[in-house]
Length: 568
Image: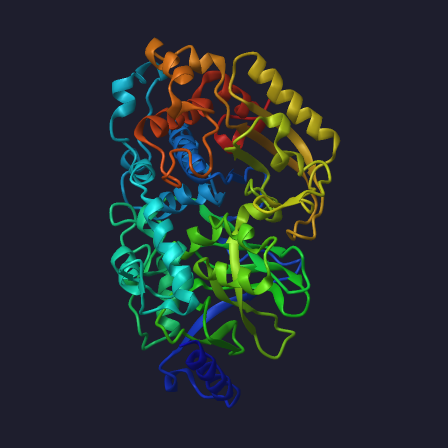
């Protein structure tokens, strides 16, 4: 199949070079692209009216289903405060995207999607044991990823000349088909798994199969550009009304036999475009392309801000399942690190890999090359950098971490140079955006808040953002920012029923609360959390942004962006 695809790509490239028109190519589509440089605005800025003094964005960190659960609770709390409709940008990484993508695209009423606010005093054992009100949290509880783990092991076996043979009495491909249904390709295993969990028919129908875009206008433009189009407007999933502009963080994993550690390149996925803004060498970065034109066989410039692309021979389309798989592919670095190159490439076969399209008008033709795509948390696990790259002036960062803020390198790397690179955590060495003295302000501020029994929140006003080449950030001033850290303060614990307070310290399921393990909290389940775990954590993170002290603290910092009146 791959040989046929390569051959077709070569033939199509010749046809494109010869000027064959789109309507003479059954596999061709016309899609928009946006070449960018350091001085360019972003494709969505004219519509959103950003940047500006009241521009407002929120960022949700990685952390598997711990973060998906905490993110859902935080969104619930923001809605309760009346702040959610004011958010213009929502960025998310890894597990944060597992909640943010369905939030952005689901048509469910928000009270069903996120769940209703409840006081900590209502968190009795009976209440905690019930099915979560939130459909996103129901997906977390229903996760059966351990089953897919066995299937993935069989998939690896299938790559070693066992396809069509019996393994322990089972037909390899037959088992995989029963677990996943019809598979699009081997490297979509992870996307198939996550799509079934977080984009099921109760959340985002068709999210794992259909094309997606931003809004009706963007879909209409695609249909008109391809008239007579091989698709209709109804074939696209679009963002639900009154949702922020979503930016999901991923990484391109550039590996080479000579590298002892992959080069990790920040990658953005939005409803409007995907790509790498900053330029890396001659053949990577420097532009965005519509999701309709991502992961294609070949591409060529049309000369009017549009590309002519050739779709995959398999019929594969780029979906929202691919988006959450890219952002949440945390195990991928461990596959590459410390293993022979050929073996690492084989082990990575069931993780996301796409044909990345590099569009630069200085080049004669877009470059299309197959690259592994991995977790956005490999570099920016907070999801903050896309907001700073766009000059957003008011930001809330939700750090849904698994450790204390004093030892959290995701935060520290924003202020102090870190040389740490590891198998799973990635590379934080290029994350400096703030002055070093501000790190002690944040750390001391969080400690003062928690020592006083409050939520772990610290806000700063009028910060300077330094330029950062890795993320394409141009320096600017006047940033107002609040950090909301995953922490269970005494003031919240004291409001819980006595039986729940006892359970927090006595029951194994709550070990480490609220810092559940990113993977394997409830072994052998890989990412599943149970009803009590998700209900309690979501209650905590919703309370953390609705408590009167928290509201007052964030209003003083972000002021008019939250509708709180002038900042004091």
